[in-house]
Amino acid sequence: MTSLSRSLTVDRPGSHVLTEGPLPEPGPGEVRVRVAAAGICMSDREVYDGHRDAAYVRYPVVPGHEWSGTVDAVGEGVDPSLTGRRTVAEGFRACGRCERCRYGETSLCTAGYDETGFTRPGAFADHLVVPARLLHPLADDADLRAAALLEPAAVIAAAVRAGAPEPGERIAVLGAGTLGLLAVQLLAALSPAELTVIDPRRERASLARGFGADEARVPEEAEEVRGRYDLVVETAGAPSTAADACLLARRGGRVVLTGMFTPGALGIDPVHLSLSQLTVRSVFGAPSSAWSYAVRAFTAGLLDPAPLITHEFPLERFAEAVALVGSGDPETGKVLLRP
Image (tube, helix red, strand yellow):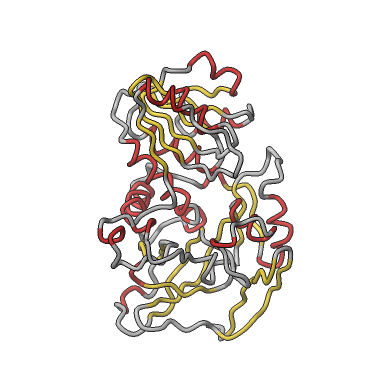
């Protein structure tokens, strides 16, 4: 085993450096993971460009909150049998003691925001160190390339749990990006009567159908199905999609918002909300229960993120990789770094 490890640090917006140093050592209660794959998402692009809210990033930082790998060392007090296990891990460093944590809402920890890849060193590296309590071990034959997408899958699992879908319901997913297509897979496994995906990119339609959608529409075609759906899961975070999601829901229906909206997004019409008696939920990150849900679905074969992956790069080509994310290229899906 090499005694050195590389890491890619964004020292300030627009500037990064790949360095090599001693292997990080796990402390008490921690494990060291050899990274197999790490996904790049728009929040990583925002970190690199300097567009992420200052309260949710701490420079210099090694990004990388979507990842998978294999435990190769354990710290004091950690079960040594974890060594060699394939794994993913929760990103939020929840305190486990506050009221929200004790209630099970670990993504809403009131002790202050702290997350791997944003305030703590992440997985754009050969190795990272995380608390053992955050691990979700995988099967011995798990596809680690696909497992790197279990972080966004956990977010969508939180949305599915919040929406409480029932068999035979009519369901719409607004957005056919990574989150939207993962939502389609999880929702298709619950036997909806109809599962519709709405996205302005027509080329995403075939991929959505391959993931289990019955039909795909562009927004202009969605106006004719307003008021139709028992459940609407919004995943796009576009300026109008929160309001659009509420218009798609039937009277008494449910809406779950997962997109990260920017200032200036259109608000939800309170008159429509009241008269339609909608239930609207939002999701921020994923609590431990949602991670367990996503990992179980992945292990059971109900969730396969692998078809979303279109590009893979070594750490040395980070600049090329991050430029693809959010570029608008219809051929670009999930981009991975492979240390």
